[in-house]
Picture 1 (cartoon, rainbow, N blue to C red):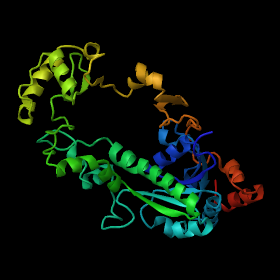
Picture 2 (picture 1 turned 90 degrees about the vertical axis):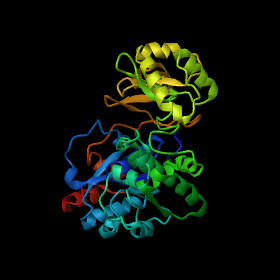
Picture 3 (picture 1 turned 180 degrees about the vertical axis):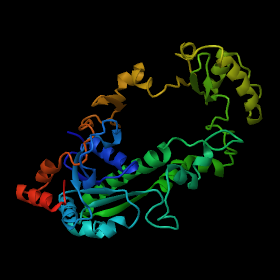
Picture 4 (picture 1 turned 30 degrees about the vertical axis):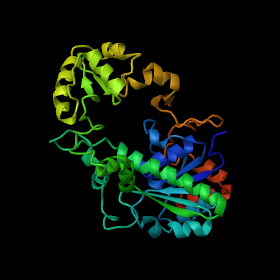
Amino acid sequence: MSVLRGYRVVELAGIGPGPFAAMMLSDMGAEVLRVDRADSVGAEAPSWDVNARGRRSVGIDLKHADGREAVLRLVEHAEVLIEGFRPGVTERLGLGPDDCLARRPGLVYGRMTGWGQDGPYAQAPGRDINYVALAGTLAMVGRPGVPPVPPVNIVGDFGGGGLLLAFGIVCALLESARSGQGQVVDAAMVDGAALLSGMIHGLRAAGDWGERGTNLLDGGAWFYDAYETADGRYLSLGAIDPKARRQLAELTDVDPGADDRSSWPATKERLAAVIRTRTRDEWCATFDGTSVCFAPVLDPGEAPDHPHIRHRGTFTEVAGVVQPAPAPRFSRTPPAVAGPPPAPGQHTDEALSDWGFSAEEVTSLRAAGAVR
């Protein structure tokens, strides 16, 4: 039995962080029912869409009066609803928080946006890179004197977005168990990206964070960076503490001199030249068993086959697609992937039946064009 078994989630289909949050809840045992657009029914199941794993799908026309009513019927049987539209869209559809909480007073209504539900940018278009930029987080990533480097879409969409929403939903569920009342969770990627950078703001306040790429944790330090090896691969070093730093200097025969910030660039050049003299695996063998904090920089295809990763079961395979396994671990109630990504509307009849609709009602909804 997984930790969220018995909880039901209605997910209004979206992209990026909303599906990621729904995937996390499903991995933890919640029953997630995705409401796909009726006009998307007929598309093949996207086995590559990892964030869509672990739920069933119904095809419903949200603009059809009967379709709207069908969703509200589903809400009556759910503890959570997730939506990722721009602010005001679900209200116009008649599926906003007031509409849904009227049907299910204890509902947790999870909202996922980039800019948030209010503010000057609330209705503006945007993407992950924009939210991370406005939060001040993008400016922290990269080398000095060159443009900042987008951290893929991990910081905004997933860390500062979907993960934040999933955390907020579980917090609201805990509160609802005490109060019996539901509420709205306003998760915004701009807020989450700022939250993730909290420690850096603390370092700035302490006067210990300067220009991008010159600091302790952003590749500025000679002992904390990724270095190219003789075979064109890379090795990560994180020898922050004094013992690890001394041992790194000894094993590479690199004298850091005074080892203050002014000396870091020159020491980095010397260390880079040394690291390029051996292959990645040779350096791993050199550092193995020492106090030097190191790891090979594995590409996404290599990572699942590393002995430690295999031992941990960090990756799994679903429908022929290798992908990250559910996390974190639990001692009594292990999480599990409930199944591969569904095709839009794949489970319309069976899911509606399981959620309280009679066969006659499903037939009537199909005849009206409200579901597919």
